[in-house]
Amino acid sequence: MKRSLFGIVVLITLIAIGVISSNTDKRSVDQEITTAQVTGEQEIGINEGNVAPDFTLYSLKGQEVKLSDYRGKVVFVNFWATWCPPCKAEMPHMEEFYKEYADQYDAEILAVNITSEESSIEMVDKFIQDYEITFPVLMDTDGMQSETFATITIPTTYVIDKNGIIMKRLVGPMSKERMIELASSTE
Image 1 (cartoon, one colour):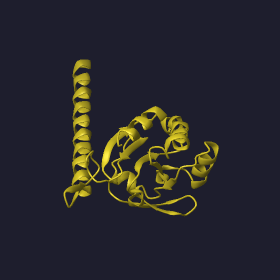
Image 2 (image 1 turned 45 degrees about the vertical axis):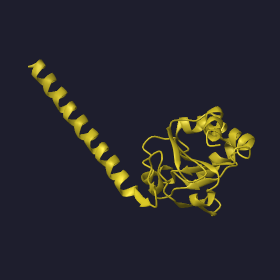
Image 3 (image 1 turned 180 degrees about the vertical axis):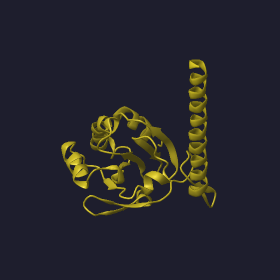
């Protein structure tokens, strides 16, 4: 009896994993199809080698920021949240890179806060002040950009070259050294 019950539990677990995996894969494929469009020779999408989808978001101060306005620069588009421990760990590294190397590598950081997952905008403002962040922090209030860029795990960073092409997608925290390595590889 116990073996039969154990077998049933294992079978149900395997089926559940298969269904979840299938839905995740399908969502990933659907995401690629819906975000991929052809523009000239380059395809717009979220994969390495694609032109990054353009977006317009607002900073906490209400300034409108468009990704395409940063063509000609290496752009780190970083998706994050205040409650995320790895996001907290990488912020000082990102700030150091920004202050010490952004000009040298003609780079910009656009930290896209997934505001739809925050308890309040005030928490985001406090985080920015506490960590003394000076690079642009944008508010994804409806979660559309994190969805467009298939951000499941945070932090997730897209490194975009000076022509708007996605060079790298990184999941997990970045170090200053890794950012220098990535920015210098676009030269």
